[in-house]
Length: 202
Image (cartoon, rainbow, N blue to C red; front, side, top):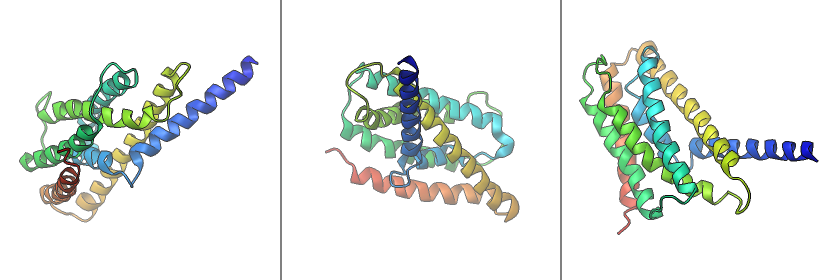
C-alpha cells in the first residue's frame, strides 16, 4: 500500500511540475514570458553571473507570494493583479532605455529590485492559476513545490532562448547591441501597454 501511495505522490508531483512549466511557457498567455524577456534582454552569455542574480531575485519574489497566497495568508483582487502584471512589463521594458553601456559595475543594480518586487506581483498571478488546481484536502506542500519547480524550469528555458536569440543577432548578424536592446524593448513595451489598457480594473 505504501508503495502505491508513493507512486501516486510521484505522479501528482510530475503533473504539477508539468503544469507549472506549461503555465509560464504558454504562448497563449505571454505576459510572464514578456516580463522575463524584458528583464534579461540587456544581458548576454558573458554576463551569466549577473543574470543568475537577476533570475534569483525574481524567483524569490514570486515564490514568496505564491506560497502566501496558496496558504490564504494574503488576499488580493484578481483583476488588479492581472492589470499590474503588464504594468510591471511596461516599467521593466522602459528601464532598458537607460542602459547605454553594457558594463555592470554596481553590486546591486536597480533591475534586481525590479525583479524581486515585481516578482511578488507575478507570484500572485501564478497562485490564481495554481489554486484552481489544488485539491481541497490533504497536504498541498508537495504540489506547491512541484508547481514552483516547474515554473523555474520553464523560466530557465525562456532565459536560455533569449540569450541564444541575442547571440544570433548581436554576435552573428553584428547588430548594434544598444539598437537591438531598444528595438526589442520597444516591442515588448508596446504589447504590454496594450495588455494593461485592456485589463484596466475600473
